[in-house]
Image 1 (spheres, helix red, strand yellow):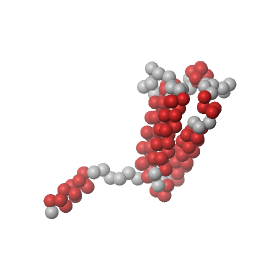
Image 2 (cartoon, helix red, strand yellow):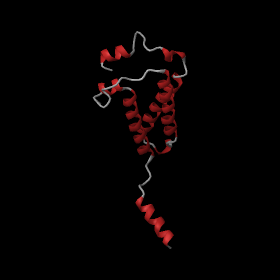
Image 3 (cartoon, helix red, strand yellow):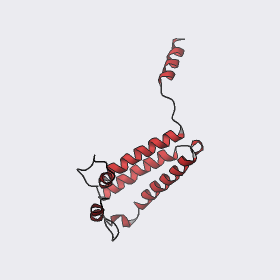
Image 4 (spheres, one colour):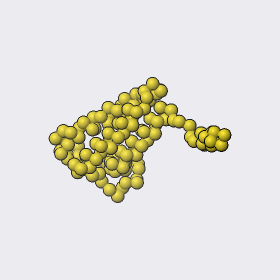
Amino acid sequence: MRLALAALALSLASPALATPDEDLAQLEQDYWQWVLRESPILATTVGVRDYDDRVGDISLAAEDRRAGEAQVFLDRLRAIPEGGLSPVSLVNRGILERQLAESIEANSFPQRVMLFTTLSGPAAALSRGQ
């Protein structure tokens, strides 16, 4: 009897399970915070001043680490059941899934060693405030 009462008390004290939409919203929030942390210039551009004392790490080791972390986000995303998502969340999920998958795939190509092009690079981002 005591065991049943303890189980009941624990079940009432534990938070309700999140819905797929809530899981996706939390994932999106976690991902955005990660993007800002990994892209301090972008963070400053959008008004987040927490990373004003740094610039992004452009080393190959950092690129590999980011690809691994993106894979963790992608795995979390794919674990969210599509069936319980609202139409808007389904679209958001699809966009984020493609963005993460392409980011991971891009890390496997030799072009990742190109630090700048005529269209982008650290100096260009600084001059545009991006």
